[in-house]
Image (cartoon, rainbow over the protein chains, first blue to last red):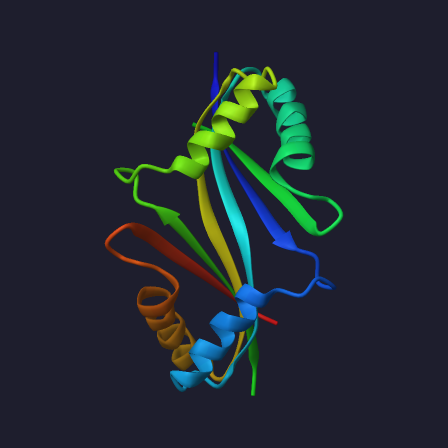
Length: 83
Length: 83
């Protein structure tokens, strides 16, 4: 069975406040990185899936939507490549 | 001054245990996603930088190494595109 390496990128929706990102931004500013703005902290989830590509793609889309992200507050996208 | 949109990807080094990833993997397995393995949870940090490209690239490399990641335990890479 082919194996696929997947990356899922989960980010807070733009309208959702990101206190962690704000804290990083303030820390950078204190370190004289005053030209940095809009810091947002999201998640990168890596996983390996075994199976045929069409099934794996459908499964990954479902996992991303139902398990790995909260569609109310987060945007998610994924990439798949053969391992 | 040009603006750049940066993405920094921070992942645990392969030799470092990832309890969060293990927990996600077990949850997926309980949901009948038994063909999923090697789940690792990392960070995706997005930021905007203002300045000329060579300076911004050097600055981002420094921030990634010194602030956004722990080089002992984590690998980090970054992407930059004009906003």
